[in-house]
Image (cartoon, rainbow, N blue to C red):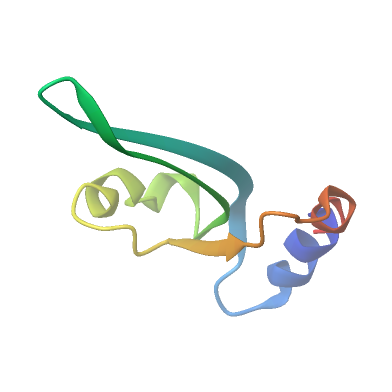
Length: 90
């Protein structure tokens, strides 16, 4: 992450904040009718979220913008069998 951060310092809009977040989500759904379970589903998903802020903390409008949409956040779906060592290279 430090090498990516350093390379983005030499642009017209230098980065002052960068974050990576890995999220694993498991969902379970059970449907029943009159005591009979007729559907039992389970799913899992993995996402890598990247957040970059440019400018400076004094001019940061993250909270204002994030209340309407996530324009400064990128989310990437990863395969369920992702390699954690590969992610550490970021």
